[in-house]
Amino acid sequence: MAHPIVQPAPAPSRVLVTGASGFVGSTLCRVLVEAGHAPRAAVHRIVPGSEGHDTVVCVGEIDSNTDWSHALRGVDCVVHLAARAHVMRERAADPLAEYRRINVEGTRRLAEQAVAAGVRRLVFLSSVKVNGEATARPFTENDAPRPEDAYGISKWEAEQALKGVAARSKLEVVILRPPLVYGPGVKGNFLALMRAIARGLPLPLASVDNRRSLIYVENLAGAIELSITKNEAAGRTYLVSDAEDVSMPQLIRALAAALGTKARLWPSPPPLLKAAGRLLGRADAVARLTGSLQVDSSKIRRELSWRPRSTLAQGLAETARWYHAEFRNKMTSPPS
Image (cartoon, rainbow, N blue to C red; front, side, top):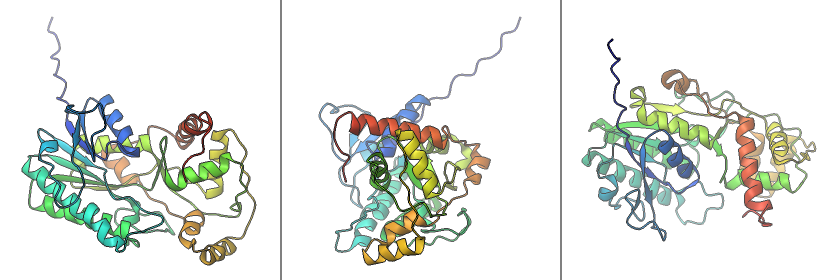
């Protein structure tokens, strides 16, 4: 009786992950290991106990002078997460120049050295802010980019820098543009909203009728893993989201339920909220709470057969569990 021929399992990809110790990077490295890959973490500085490990490589400051040669040795694919993040209260004298130094020139330098090292593919985590700040209908990959702030402009210019490197080499570039990413370890506005809900603060947002796209960090990590392995992803740009768009009142109620508390929402006309935001110098923050920002993620679902691993309710439940473990059980307040 003939025995079926057993095909050997594909060799694991050695994946360099920049920003590996961050919010998205830490989840991604775990997901890559579970999928059979061998991630190598590029970090700004070595922490005690990680010296000498091939899985952790110190690259220092990311800009046009970064030496990536050691980190890229033997690497099949790069996932570039590290960036100068969107800053709510900007202190740099020339914010755009600082974003460009790290996000554009640092990205270009990485891509050029990846080509020299023989890397096959580079997956770049961009941002929906490349498309714009608000929608009347969901953004698609065919929409003309309209970044409005320094961060969004730098991400758009980084995408163009990568495409330029790819055009004159064999490097395959994949670009992902997520909306707001949430999950265990989240910071910024989402953490501030969770804190307000957990403390029972009244929120004047009951009258807001908008739609916001989100993506759970585990779902994003799954999309990145497919972008590494799928041949169809080469040279593509994808918008990616949970595809469960919610209004701000719906999100607050869902978060409150996950946190085991009751949402304290009271009505206030959105024009009044916007006027108050302008008077207080918080117009952008109010716009994010009251405006719509949606993405259509059907392209990545169709081309890569990607599906979110978790629903919005599951993602919020995991985020709430993390919040309680980190803050309530330690009897500490989350950072501002």
